[in-house]
Length: 81
Image (cartoon, rainbow, N blue to C red; front, side, top):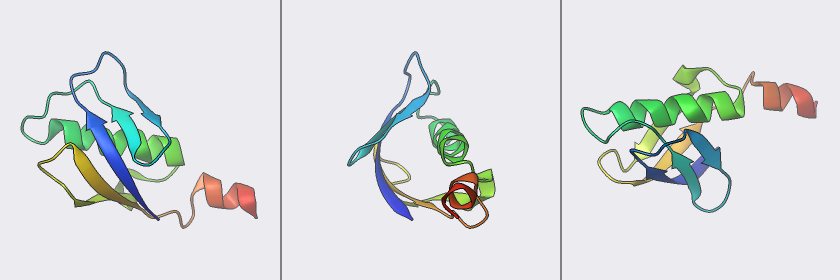
């Protein structure tokens, strides 16, 4: 599954708000890839998948990103069966 994400770095909270694009607040500043790493951690937790199943497809250096989430074997897939 691919989703469009708008990252809000340096936020006082860390969370994900569904929508198009998703809005994801991260504590980290956008330096040395720290905000991207926190983004991937938040989304992996939100979707119940391993961190390795979430990757940025487009927008590594931008606040607007496209993220791919591999849902095979996730808690969401198990619940729908």
